[in-house]
Length: 249
Image 1: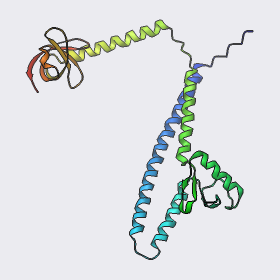
Image 2 (image 1 turned 90 degrees about the vertical axis):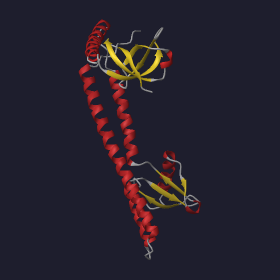
Image 3 (image 1 turned 120 degrees about the horizontal axis):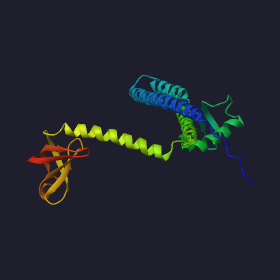
Image 4 (image 1 turned 30 degrees about the vertical axis):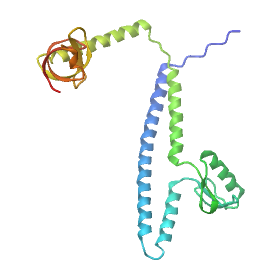
């Protein structure tokens, strides 16, 4: 039994999806970066407030600082549940539902948070169960978007013949060679420093300039590892020829 061949998706549609998903991914990444910068700024502010509260000798300053920290944590949007040593919820913040602490849903949600992050030990042997930052959920969304971008791009069929690919590569290489030939020809007569890196035959060495151009020149093996001053005498598309002017160091 022959299975029907899947219908080909038009390349214009695939390309459109790639552009849309790529744009959304870029926007999400930019926005998440801004959110993380804001988190760093807010954490620094909280640190300064704690240090200031510890050094404040006014009556009730410590309690005022703690209350401000609690308010700041609630504003961060991280779901939190504190439980005592027996597992009974004693405090909560940013739950996705409204409920009293003795509501069974609170204990169930604490177990759900433990699947996201391991709980940490709190005062008196209790535990603090916490979820992810809102930015972390958006990073997961970004990963899904980029996976969709990859899958969509893979559906874009390669309809360019191999002969055309080789022709295009040949044209690009030809333009590159012409550009390099003109660029290197303009260096003839100039002097440059060359770090000698290798033996290039009997009585010949080669090295690179500070701009990573390859230079061949006459010289002994003792020049290996030395920085020398070279006058450029000839040029080729991929390298230069020169003669030793002096040893730099």
